[in-house]
Image (cartoon, rainbow, N blue to C red; front, top):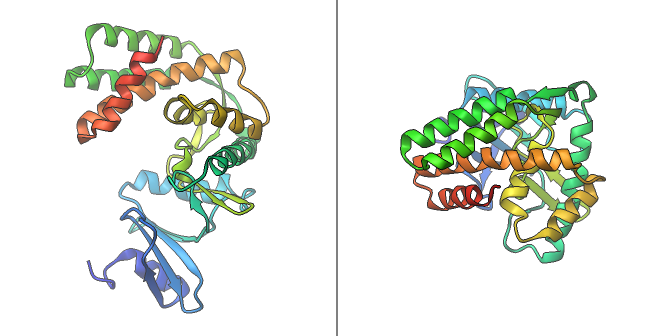
Length: 278
């Protein structure tokens, strides 16, 4: 694809004038770092999925309007190419191996404080939700795992039992990020930013802790402590039990996606998590 044909460059040029692509620090292929004639930087993001494009635009134009100090600005978007032009956020990816232990703890503390603001930003979305739709999703993933032959009969029964518990569980709703983990955090001196809102929607508030609990905090309780110190409160017993139920969704999802994409690391994560579940 030539520069002229690239819809990301075309959107940026249409909105801010002539731009130049910059070699970014290992950005995913769908992201492009550009600068205008004055040197101001932007990130241009192109979605494959129209649904995720719509969800991210909606997040920036509705849910995030009171959180501009935590997020990029949506400068422009183009539905025909599913492309967003975003202001550039400085800082280090909080998943970077170059972060010191102190910086990692600091990033978790600030991530907790930021998520609390995010969860409280849209009070009308904080209703009680039924767990039936999440139970249905778990059953769908379990069926795919069973068809692929990657779970045993006992594991299938175990997952269905978790789904049954979810179906009868009430949970506190909120606007959720739903991919809240260090790869989507930026730390810059005294500033902290959140990126990537393509999954953002109303959901069970506790789900925003699930990937941290089951992917990041295993064996690192100090990071969990730092996070909830920033969040301002610990989970209740009921919320902690719900978080364990979400571990079952995490496990079967990782197993199926790891199998379908040939990602051995993801499959191993799903298998280890499924083994740890009570």
